Length: 446
Image 1 (cartoon, helix red, strand yellow):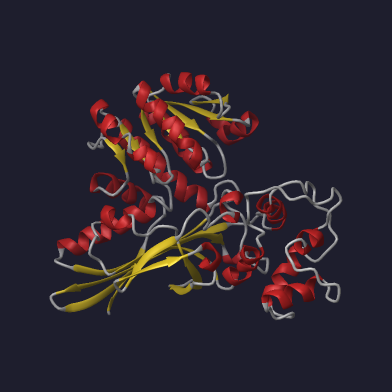
Image 2 (cartoon, rainbow, N blue to C red; image 1 turned 90 degrees about the horizontal axis):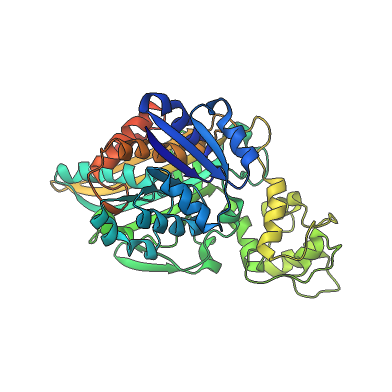
């Protein structure tokens, strides 16, 4: 019997847990799911209690974490990204394989040599983005190279969105994953990419103004903004000499220009605690970021300050959120980002019957025998339910399939890994296709 520890049972873990429970009898697995909310874990496990055990877990309790890791053969961390490193370090010290869906921090790359020496798989970036984006890109890049193609440009965008029939608010957006990550998106560094041989750098305060329009077959147009660091993937993808490489995030058309209001005002700042009165309203929150103007009300003040159309779509989106109203803020003694997040969690929540949607789009431009070609690959996946969302499926299922590969000894590589080798991406993508997660490809003359 192989024992698997899943740490974290949040929004993105439900489909992972269901897959592992469904396959446990045939694969001879025993599962432990550890989370701070044990009642939630039990509800997610449901009828799978014969093969899965719920355990209360405190991420700050290092001794408990070590004991749990030591009792299992493979550890899957679905914790917030900042907590993965402690889990992986324990796995390395104790001698256990580990998988995370998140980006590899620099500190984790430093564990690579020791992991190789100890014969361990420390597999990361195996969710949706990062994850399916890497695997689908590498499958096509390897195919183009095998055909003698020379890459000229690679662009890749992904977004967690809402299915058309559930798109019921002016923003065209609802939370399907960690709300904090959405509110803080784009912070923490300069967005960097290369376009037609020119390096481009976009600071946070300009990020949501520098968007491109992406047309996804059968689903319409979206706005894309650049991710923080596209350049780090040139080496991983074998695209060191490519003139154009951009990775970015998709939002419904019009979202970014409205979100930019919060960025320009400072409402997404998470670095300080606001000193608002205990009975502060949402109008008070907004006015705290506007110039003092006794002649203008909050609507007129905002429109004048940022040059907005007082009767335009952006103002309508802000009005819908209630920012000009007298609704009370539950806890105004927080950072601007945390206060804004509390409002959005109320307004952008998935309602009963809502379904989310993930959209991923790649464009490859390359030459073969003096012919200039373009290949577009798009993935659109809609959620099953509020629990088994498209985000949960596309993040959790690649992790689950990779866990099966590791446990069955089907991954020869050792060390700190990304899913860019064929021995990983081929079987994972193949099974995802069997589960209904597949790309539509279209090749054009450029």
